[in-house]
Length: 111
Length: 115
Image (cartoon, rainbow over all chains, first blue to last red; front, top):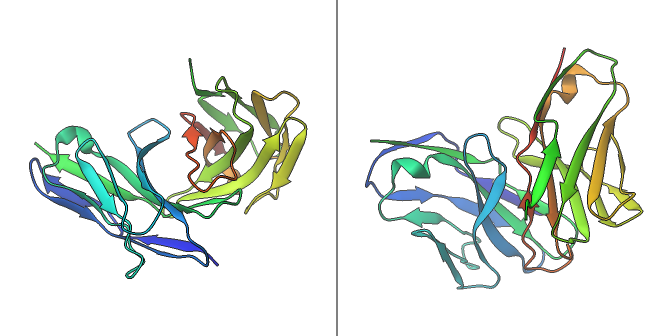
């Protein structure tokens, strides 16, 4: 079945460091791919998405490219801030009623 | 525009007690979902609804019931709570649910502790 695998956390970085959170997927169809972010005490909110191969989603300095050849959708940011501390979820949606979420990666950014 | 709201925010139950979690959305979305979030397991779909008066089972439906009597509300019930139902519960909604580009909008969550 369809699945999402993302790197285990927590990831701890210093402010202004480069961030990569790996995400790979398995899907039988042609899914849309998402990154959601969950700030402390809040629900998930959409960070960015990509709907077809080679698309790049971007928002708030984060970006991720839909790589069909490697079935990956890695999240990157060039310079993280303390305010980016959160849990990040990779997800895929193939058009049914189910979105499949990864286990989440917690990011801590130190000042 | 409040988006998706959930009531209550936190609840402690004893084993065997019952309770209802309320989710409300003001975005006129057709589709609504209940998830539970447990450490290291991401989000797992409990039940979902594709419109007023309809509900369907998700990945982990046992021990839960749902109702969607009004389009804007989606209720999750626990008839006889068990410690295994200790979790954080999230409600979400989306405009159509079936579209491949569909984004889900989440509520702030309900933290439930069953003793």
